[in-house]
Image (cartoon, rainbow, N blue to C red; front, side):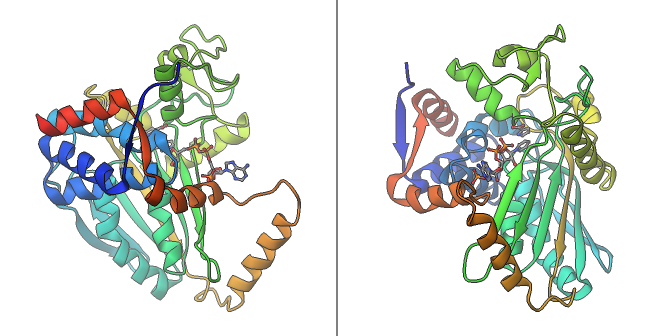
Length: 337
Ligand code: NDP
Ligand code: PYC
């Protein structure tokens, strides 16, 4: 039976999550930065990283596993590298604070990196890259989390679900942005399947006994698998190196070992790259991108990544977002406590 839903406007969703985060110990600046990213995830139809994550953020704040009064600082490390010391706060505020310096460096150097080693990332990644592409830059973002995923061929947890995002500016249109886990599925999708009593496709994970299973609760106790066998496994490893080892953040294994078990995010590594096509001398860049996409789309059955998200974005300001009643009551109770 389908769960009862409550329909919320985007503003009501934002206010509810901001109130819950503040009631859990965040100041307004930290709460609003995090609530904005969750609201935008639900707005765009990415429900595994919308209000679904609010109870986890609140639990981490209450347990002091996440600094709700974080004051991220920007450090100019090198001509092409900016670092944000995130003060063990949430990634959304750290990224927001570091973005202007990243854009300035990418424009002056052609390519630049933003390194964050002590922020808790519990969100979708496209909010990291989309604003950079809106500023005319090609962007990539990489983040690790706790150890949930086995290397290809293995059965032991080594990697996070290690997502990455890629964004390209377009001529007269919103940027093309893709954003995906390097596991066969985001953990959030498996958690939602377990909550709603659905099975999941084969290939998403193994049980604690190492046997393949389609039962989400068993996979959550066991291990997730990379997408596409050894190819996804290599990407998971690359994301681990770029996000954790290049920034000094915890690897997913270290994050797991240090995890206090509050159910929310743990600090880890996060790297964002930005490239300026103009500084690469590519004055026909936007036209060539359009030609590439036109050719792709001429093939029936092809769509661009991000198109589903943009369609939801056009719809939800009018239609609002449906939130499971139990989740709504949970977040409301936190906000009113
Ligand atoms: P999905 O598999 O749902 O989507 C991955 C990408 O593929 C999206 O850009 C999507 O675009 C695109 N896509 C889907 N179907 C098609 C198609 N038929 N043709 C072309 N493109 C397509 O994402 P995941 O489940 O892997 O990840 C969901 C979210 O979870 C992401 O936002 C990710 O950042 C987040 N996440 C966060 C983690 C963290 O540690 N913070 C860890 C893991 C995941 P569209 O959206 O338009 O469908
Ligand atoms: O959905 O895989 C996931 C995830 C991990 C950390 C945050 N989201």
